Image (cartoon, rainbow, N blue to C red; front, side, top):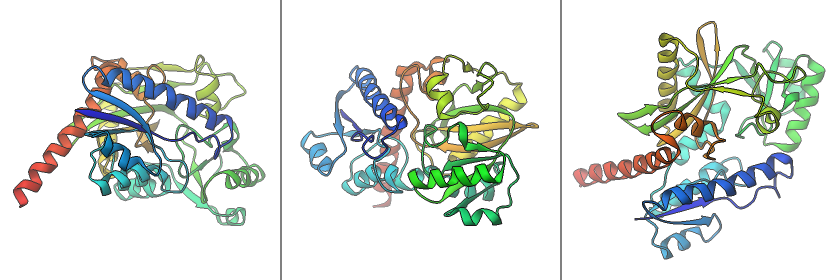
Length: 335
């Protein structure tokens, strides 16, 4: 069996910030690590998404694509490679174009969470600062792009406490990111992230990770901002497994699986939470979480149990293979 790891072209040209440069470097390092793991069992190559990706995959006789593409441009960029592969009939890991689109657009995902009775912070969104006068969310407010991951666009200035700061931050975000800009209720509480792996009846939850900000310098806010992730990793304490009683742990796990299924996630995803007054609020789902060994949160979770990093990568591939085999069986029965 031949697996192709497919990733994006460098994004720094379109996001010429420290965020873009770090994203590109992390992608390169992740590709090298995945290739090392997958090559133990499969023939493995790596390719970059471009206009000729389908012909390249067919020429190489690839059986499965390990999708690492967040996309470069456009509001649906994370769905672009899955859509191309579905059209070409080439199997791939992770969620469908629709699943990625729903998870990536936090406005749509939060609407689905509320409709599904999954606790999530109150929110609104604006295309222009003039719309802020009709806002009905109380301060403090977290300002963030609706369609970015890995804390891109969420920095120390994103948590605002007054209208002037809100207007200034929204104006800055609108210049860099796709409108509308999302405004969410800030949940003051402990922060957790949950890795879910598998499909259907074969879904498992990795050890819950708690992100402890107690050692972060006082001038920084206590949330997972870009600065905290990128520059204060040594001051951020990761408790994995998280310090939770059984009932709360079970509640978070059930809520994570419910959120995962509500958006139609496949193979693996990561769900972020804030816990307040015993209620686990789903902040968002990352349908294509980072897989950098020793760095990405879902990898920390895997490394805290018997699965390990290698096991996580193989489990993702196995889940995708099993999903396609089951799909083929269903199609055979319907003929």
